[in-house]
Amino acid sequence: MAEIIIDRKQQIQLVAQNLFRTKGYGASSMRDIAKEVGIEAASLYNHFSSKEDLLKEICFGMANHFFTSIEPIEKKKFSAKQKLEKMIECHVAVIVSNIDASSVFFHEWKHLKEPFLGEFKSLRNKYEKKFIQIINEGFEQKLFRKVDVKIVSFTIFSALNATYDLYKPNGKLSAKDISKNISDIIINGLKPTN
Image 1 (cartoon, rainbow, N blue to C red):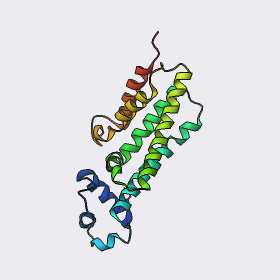
Image 2: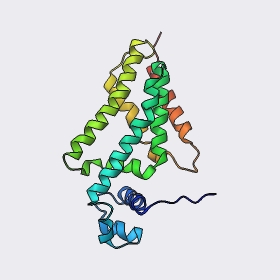
Image 3: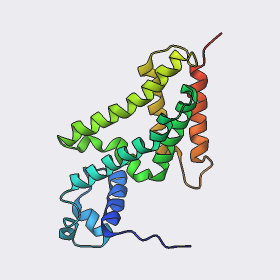
Image 4: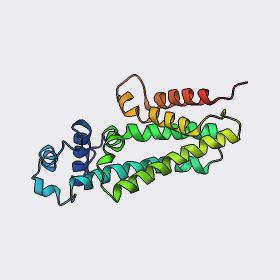
């Protein structure tokens, strides 16, 4: 088995993600990160200008993963139901690919300062609108019964964004199991009633 080689910058980010998840962003210091990495605190600044720079890298990196994961689906000629299922699957896959970064993305973003905070919120809204668009397509295609789209979106993201708590690498549920269960519950709940 080939050994995975990571550079110092990646190593620092991995350690920071874990600390931000376990201790919280506010309770983690650059000194804590340096100690975990095994370097002097001053050496961190060769790679990241500040703790917020690390947070920004994690949050915007995860946002990019979410967008790129669903991009191919948006271009295909799937029904709204198929698109929603596949987008749910992609969202879960991104979360389980990096549980620490996902947790930071969902909980610690509020520590970003302007202009990055506004930019992050804008990206999050843009991503949520992609799901809302698919839900609206489902209404138009009469695949989903007409309900309040914001409530549907909120329900989907509440379920999806808890994945990092549900998923355990050696646990009973795989990422596919989680996404399939969430899809089934959401899509069956949206089925038109006769």
